[in-house]
Structures are given as C-alpha cells and as structure tokens.
Length: 116
Image 1 (cartoon, rainbow, N blue to C red):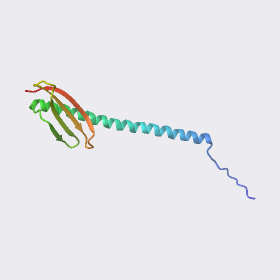
Image 2 (image 1 turned 120 degrees about the horizontal axis):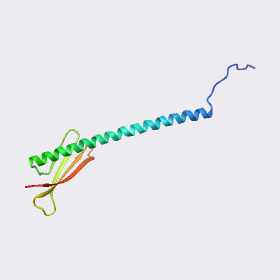
Image 3 (image 1 turned 45 degrees about the horizontal axis):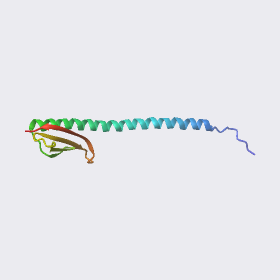
C-alpha cells in the first residue's frame, strides 16, 4: 500500500463558525448603512416638498390667487385647494398637497388665509 506523506489541512468547526459570524456582522453593518441611505433619500424628498409648499403658499398670498389649481412640475404635482372656513366670509382654508411621480403624497399643509 502507498502511504500519503503530506498532511491535508482543514478548518475546524470553531474556525468555520467564527468565519460565519464575521460575515454575518459585515452583512448586518452593510444593511444598516443601506437603510440609512434610503431613509436620507426620503427625508431629502420631504424637505424639498416642504420648501415647494412654502414657495407656492407665498406666491398664492402675494398674487392673491385663491383658486383651486393643479400644477405639474418635473418631479412633483402640486394640488392647491381653497375652501371657505365655516361660516366666515373673509377667511378661507388653503390646502396644498404635493405628490411625487408615483402619485404618492409627499407633503401637505393647511393654512387659514384672509381673503378679500
């Protein structure tokens, strides 16, 4: 019979478990980073929509245009709705909603305004 003169090296069970734990920790950290990136993207979209609401609100009050409108931009659709406030003649509720390209509500704001 022929005897093998070289030893075969193999990993023990403990070494394999340690390797799997290291891989698991690496994937967990990567998943947390990916989640933060996705959330920051949504926050950036929300902040941009809030700034757009403030701009639309200021333009509406400056131009005294209290009409229902739907304005389409490159990335958002702005819906502006004006309705009377209870039984008051000079007070209206101005509601501005911003939808993204998927028709999902990104931001909205209601405000009481004095009309003439």
